[in-house]
Length: 146
Image (cartoon, rainbow, N blue to C red; front, side, top):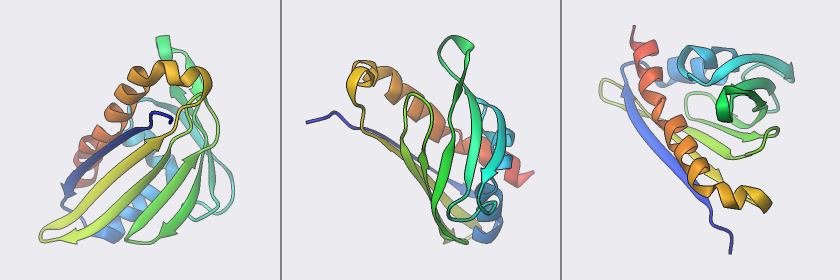
């Protein structure tokens, strides 16, 4: 059985689910809240919608840039964004779940990765990276509540 890596984090953002969704769905906003994103562009498909592919360069081990391209696999405005990383050494799939709450929106960010081959040997590093990635929701909260 493969050791699966998973990470999840939630925050309450003082904005409507529609506002949070619009910001998250547009991948070009990633550098505003995800510290590891060096560059991003819409490679194909409709921006922020199912089928959109974003070409992304992210900070990798030792500070070198690596590919982190992803495709939006499900997009339900105000509710859910699912994506699959399609380039790079680790290719997790992820989900943003948006739930209306008094005073704002509960934003939950989850990542799941099933390592294969040599990536199995890097389980600890992969887990640490995923934990850091989902915790960046704190930055999202700061940006959206400004």
